[in-house]
Length: 257
Image 1 (cartoon, helix red, strand yellow):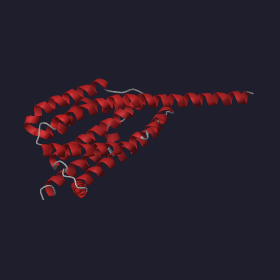
Image 2: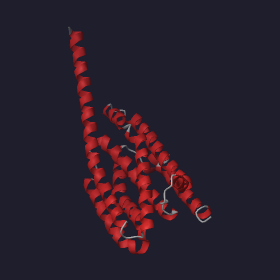
Image 3: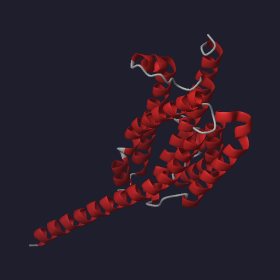
Image 4: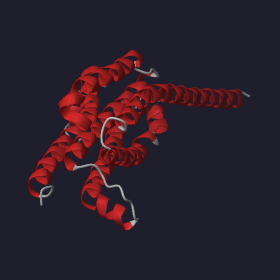
């Protein structure tokens, strides 16, 4: 009789734990959707605006590149976002060290997808577009690299936002993502007369870094008791260096040939 009661109690506890985890994942998902919609809405609005401010051929190239980047971003999300239920479960079980290692691996995989995709697009993107008969090509290299920089910053910020979210079951930066959007629009307005279309990815990058990225990652490192270097020495640091070196190499030796 006692054994049966213990088994029933165990089943009840496992059922409650499972429901708690499912509820947590659901809460994180819809809150993340709202924050993501706020950031995406600003970018889409500015994309529509840029189409009316620059020559049609440049606008078409920019919007095509942006759409391709959006698809690359979606593909790069899979290695990290598909593991969120597993991360949440490990967090609930108190296996923080194991969770952090799995988070690092998934982040690294995501960055690898992005860098590989960018390199492919640079060398073979226009060739592929010609092959399928497209009359529009990718944007020129200088704008491409600014867009790529923002893509990396956005992914870096987004993954750290998710890490904080399932560590605390709390969405961080509701207000700051709105401020980031406002600052992006203001910077774009100020810089467009000088940088033209380059002002859009540049403004987005600066606004993200100053008003959202730094805020999120500092809280995150404190939460997991890590420094920027200790956590990122095999992640965003080498990825950023690789991206910078490749950009310089491409600009010097390839883009003008």
